[in-house]
Image: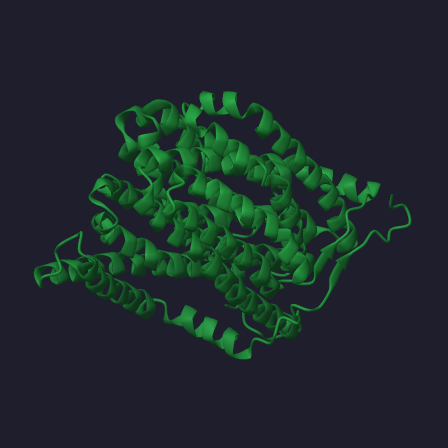
Length: 512
């Protein structure tokens, strides 16, 4: 993927180097997420087989609560490390001190307050799960700072060891416990084990950060955190407040049904949108520092999102009824999944646009967009949750798409708006793929693969639908694919070997 325009003129060499770095970074981080998040998808399927709807609901509530804590303790770490003009090692050391300290305090609060917190969420049975999951917070804080330092220079290959390794540890342990009959305890224990090994594997990958203190660096981090930090908290509420609302109103059983559809619909977002966003922000930040045009890069990243995330979302929506291959009791999750596929595409689009908003130094606008999204979602949930989990999914879909136009307006005024016609062409190709995939699915069902509970029928229908959708999307985006292939052909190594030490030290003369 080429983040800038044509490689001619005085900045051509820099443009080409940045394009190669972005392409290489996207591929490495994509591979990391494929392995790490892919293991989570496997875990979701296994848990759906071993746990009841209520048990899965309790696990979801506990993990959602801890997810809020993870964002509070990180408070924009990735942004601060990526944007700072100071010594990044010093900044990382300060952030390690602050983040781990906050994580320890939050873990203590989770241990002491698990009972009233779980009761307030309408799931008192989740109390021991909250306690176990809360213990993971200091470890994920340390690992988060390590990841931020890796992101600064688009060196995503280093993430392979800590990110994938910790995910595999969590998955294997959780699956083993679930198969052994430990029920809802399986996932929190697995997540805790994965969190503990995360920073250890980061050190093994060569990212060693020494906690320290530097007052000027801390002051800079605080200035950025004042806006980005609250935005990060709002962001995590956006993807967890629905769980909490469903739990209080409809109970853990409904949370289990809703969460299965959500977890499946969330997979393309974490495996594609987060990858592109993680790569795009440092690219935008570098272009901004070098006073170059952002629009070509923004256009390509948005189109890449629609292509790479759009294909699985269309396929999931068309094949949603076949979710009963896990068990007939999960049939109510099928319509939830269909609606949430539309939400997932919208959430990915608004995420990519808001990454540009942050990169063009509009933190106030970024926070306002996040708050507007949260307000719309809370209002929608208050209105629709009593009508069931499908209505809850519609609240998500409507709220996320209502935030896209204001984000486009902000980018138009800031000079970072993606080019309209290329994006519309890609979106049109996605609609055509939906129609073609639907027709292909009908043909497969007519040919004898109509049993939604049959694994062979799922494999046959899935293959036909995915191939059809991908082919239509590819034909309508040949220029983007050529762009990606060109960047891939010329992309050099990212320059970071797993054995290279990247040691964060406090070398500032005023460091504590």
